[in-house]
Length: 421
Ligand SMILES: [Zn+2]
Ligand SMILES: [Zn+2]
Image 1 (cartoon, rainbow, N blue to C red):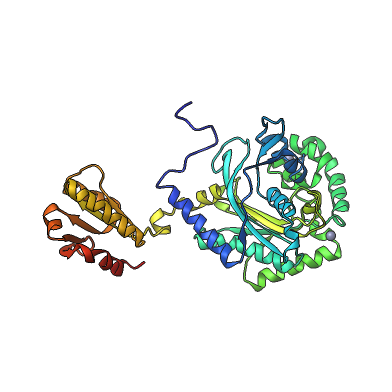
Image 2: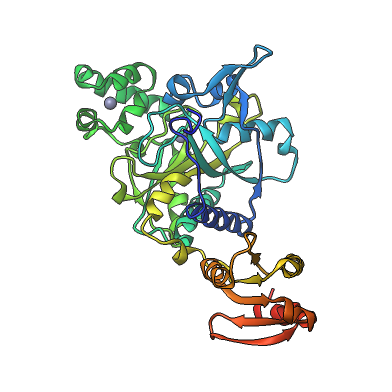
């Protein structure tokens, strides 16, 4: 127990963490370019927030939440997703009073008590965006293009963007009834979850991965044929906007988002090479959610991307391909007096923005040179007591393979010029 992390969690060690940092840097940069501002919400919230917003009938709320009573007998839940907390913060801090739309992004760990499997953990990481305050289909296209741009920027190829419209509270109820009637005849062939969904949420049956359920729903009439005029128009404009900014897509009429507050645009980004769990992320509109959470009617659109799955898709790429680590300087100090000078030297270099490292184990010069190799040092400063007494050091250029004497005073300025800041 003491030396094993809880099931479904993991440590991210050096060697792997560089890939995480790479992904994190890429999406933060993209968010800045797209003018999205970061929001950081607590790791836990009142349970009621998720029960209301994510919905009691979902797997998340029904089976997967980390819920506990705190010492004050309040029911607390570790956040299973990022949208509800963002909506809560939008309302709590009256962000609706600011110029709209409010464009936010978040990043961090989420928690679901799920059966751990490839790319699926109990503590996992998502980044997502939420935009509040505009119904514009052009905005849906922007949000979708940001998700697509992320995968493009990190070099994950061969993905498919799937797109659908799930209608609105005006046009969906009649469609839902039609599905219920159509599927009721096959009740006995449905999987356990779907026979329950038939009563509570028949649209989600379209999304079931079970073979039997898939066959039953194969010939079901499509939502796109049942959209009201406003929804049809909205969908058309989303599609046209995506085409205008050259984002390719595939319409998938079976793509649904089960809950009532999801409206109109739904999308998912799929990696066909990943098998059954092939969704790397997705999102869409949720024009009715802010109201469900106690606010005024506020249109909204967003998405979430799972970092673990993105890393699976990245697996074949080595860190060196992705992440150009900046070259550094190794200070090889020999002897006790030189050791202190070495510490002063690395401190000075670091203050100049140059990556620097020294030995802390009194290694031989030969061993220190090996260490310099391991950290991929471009230069090594060799400090022997003799040179130091003359106010000099040896500067070895590891790439060119030559070395020369430089005065200690000049060394920092010299390296700053060579390595740039
Ligand atoms: Zn509609
Ligand atoms: Zn099913």
